[in-house]
Length: 344
Ligand SMILES: CC(C)(C)CN1C(=O)[C@@H](CC(=O)N[C@@H](CC(=O)O)C(=O)O)O[C@H](c2cccc3ccccc23)c2cc(Cl)ccc21
Image (tube, rainbow, N blue to C red):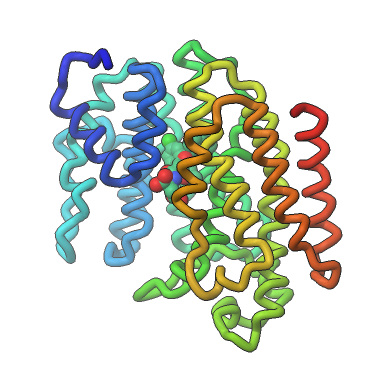
């Protein structure tokens, strides 16, 4: 494959990407070189923000300023993250490779990455000290950590000249569909976090089923756990129609595959998690063989419609009329099925 003259900082970024997310590193290779570098840097900058946000060993009065200043930090290759308590993750020790590569990007890409980083850093800082209480809080938090990623990617795709600019609303939904799926799938991993779990399940939903979010781990609570799980999944399914609409507007094959693969993993994960008590016993991951099949066989909207259709049918088959959310779940799934039939 034709490679740009080797630049050690850029090569390091791709090696780091391989480490933090193998499947993502594979999918990103399909993008053209300029856009690929911009998305690689964008991913690593976001990963840097995420690492700081998630690190419970960093005191609040240190963490908040770092999050808020991160959009300036990325311009400073001299910046080193020094946090006494622990030898910091490779990503932060070697972050100067990311900022150096960032500074070599076309300015139009830099501007997008810097703006999104600033908005995300401020949003994360807000939610460090705010609980996710209402469904509105839940949508706002997911907007900051994932919706903005969609908005940023849409702007990078447009800046590359390969795509028209998608609306912020559809771009936001692309992120929310992925993030809400992750939050649902990772319940047990998150609630068992030491020293203190950070949970993003909105009290407005789980409060209908139990007094404590941790109760859903208990064997004897399985009926209310499933009712809550199905309610959360029904909420996530609201974004599927926007996701299909966003993807159907994409023109470039590589960008399409880059966007479609995580969305299909998400609908497959939601179908696997629906009414599945295993979510509260372990992490429900779709089988590697199925994931590999999705990566290999997704190349057109026809593939996306037929996959969304199949997983929506799978989910429908699991709906129990006794489930409190069942009529709303049916409505959302019917909506997806008819969209796939009409366009597929
Ligand atoms: C929080 C998140 C969903 C945005 C994270 N996120 C994604 O999940 C990655 C996929 C990924 O990293 N998956 C993990 C597995 C996992 O985490 O479960 C993997 O190791 O493959 O994809 C997204 C992503 C890819 C393509 C289009 C997108 C449009 C809107 C929003 C996000 C989009 C992503 C793109 C960028 Cl640039 C940055 C981050 C992400």
